[in-house]
Amino acid sequence: MKKDEAKKAASGAQPRSPRATRKEAKALLSEVSRLAKRHKKRLSTDQAERLEAARLSLIETLRDPKAAASLIEERSAALDRITDELLGSVRKGSTREFFESITVAVVIALVLRAFVLEAFKIPSGSMIPTLEVGDHIFVNKFIYGLRVPFTNMWFVQWGSGPERGDVIVFRYPRDQTKDYIKRVVAVAGDHIRVEGKDVFINGVKLEREDPVLLSYFEDAEPGEDLGFHQFQRAHAYAERSRSEPPAAYTVLYSAHLGERPPFPSGEALPGVECVYGEAGRTSECVVQSDHVFVMGDNRDNSSDSRAWGGVPMALVKGKAMFVWWSRGARAGVRWDRMGQPIH
Image (cartoon, rainbow, N blue to C red; front, side):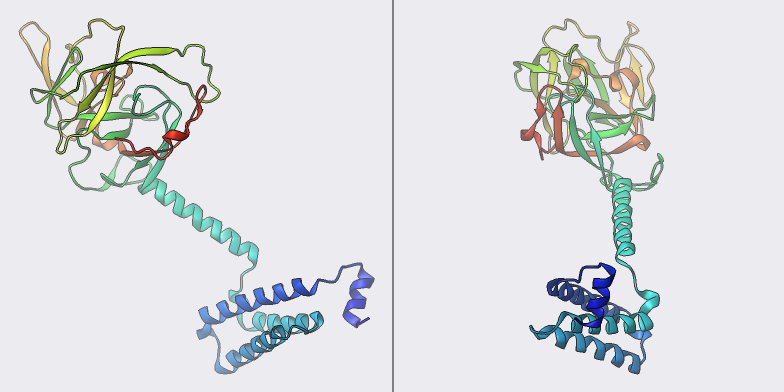
């Protein structure tokens, strides 16, 4: 028994297999080649030649299929010592490299979340049928401009902002700790009024097709009590926005609700300036600069600009893109909604 093997046996350590020895030697060669290439300016001509000689010696040994594991270990150790001597200050352990990789990945994820893309979960049925309770969506935060992270300030804005028909995520104006998602119906400068089920933008009623009567179940989030949820009956209208080109989507109106209050009904709301008629009722409102007017697609089951006014552009987070995951307490995983774009 050779001396080094005898030491291993005496200590109780198991000798490594030839296959494991070769694998470790190849990993060492890969590391040394990478370091030598990246930091070649640190090495003098003599140092580079010493390192290359040790590297080639190990390569030649590995090319011999009959080379003893002890010889491979000896030449690996020699290369390892020279590498430590010449490039020890820049050499990194595998643990350090792992944590550096994780750190870089986390930083990239945080930058993407702050400036480009963020995930949101739909907690209510105000956007049915476009969005279901339990839908998880991605929002494009870069589309309207570049915002200072975690603030309502913009580095820079581009374009004219959200367009009519866009589905946007924003901080709720009355409680900015909450995020809301609604559809933009009118933009700054637009005149808007709502009479019953009809929405008028700049004096023109939004175009709709004939309604279809349907039943739907407003699901709950996983783990939520389903006791108060039930099947609803609604009239579904295919509606088109006042934009070029028009955005097509579906809105719902409850089949059981009678007369609906007009908008606006006299209450002063932020973000809109209203003109009153002779009877003391508002005939229409104008959306103010840097604001948008939003409504839920589930029109009779949505708290939106009709109740609390326009959304300041400073609170707009971005435009909804697509559903990446969907699961409800009753429906379970909704595989058919995965990847569905949001229009």
